Amino acid sequence: MADMSPLLRRTPRKNPAERTVTLIGKPDCHLCEDAEAVVAKVCGELGTSWEKKDITQDEELYRKYWEQIPVVLVDGAQHDFWRVNPDRLRKALGG
Image (tube, rainbow, N blue to C red; front, side, top):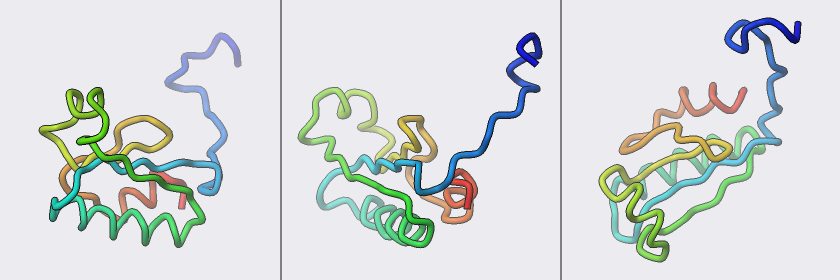
């Protein structure tokens, strides 16, 4: 299996409790508040840990994401921005 293409190789799915969701946003942002509600609900249902980061407190995050907030990362990889679909997030987390 080592010589098989990575696209065809199956990797074991992570348990939702082993995943981490990061919500990147800023204060007084109605889309960020909506996204936080979705992230909190889905992560709470699945037992997934999540954190919130404020782009106004982090220059690198600001440069990278200021046009896209809110941004949702799953295990450090960008998953969504602007609107968070709960079913899509649940599926990405393995729930």
